[in-house]
Length: 166
Image (cartoon, rainbow, N blue to C red; front, side):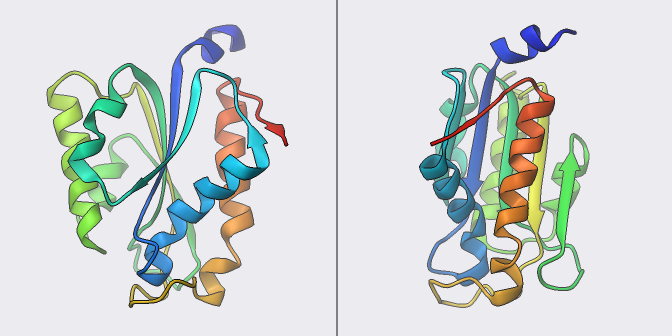
């Protein structure tokens, strides 16, 4: 498949999380920075999915490739980053970190049942240090934000998408 073919499909970059639950909000903070700092081609949407869960189902219709950015329970030390694809995603979401992750797992399952499952899915995540009520990330997770942004940009580039700095 040529890079021209990669560029034509719809791509969704979805930041998930709760901004008032400390590290749980990392996915939303990453996409907000991407939205501020980069311009994306028309076939790419960068979206703050917050804690919407199944309400995001219409957004998956027609999406060929999906990148999810979220805090993920890996059992590793806080700030450990992870990249998961395909069948690894439902397994990673088995350990419920916060209420929105059950919604995310359900969202992906229902999308698959309805035939709206993206052909390619990648979860770029980080092990949280805290999911207590707080609007700030812990230092361990804050230190990963630039790396998470770089990981999203790398995924997009591998798909033939070239975001431009603003």
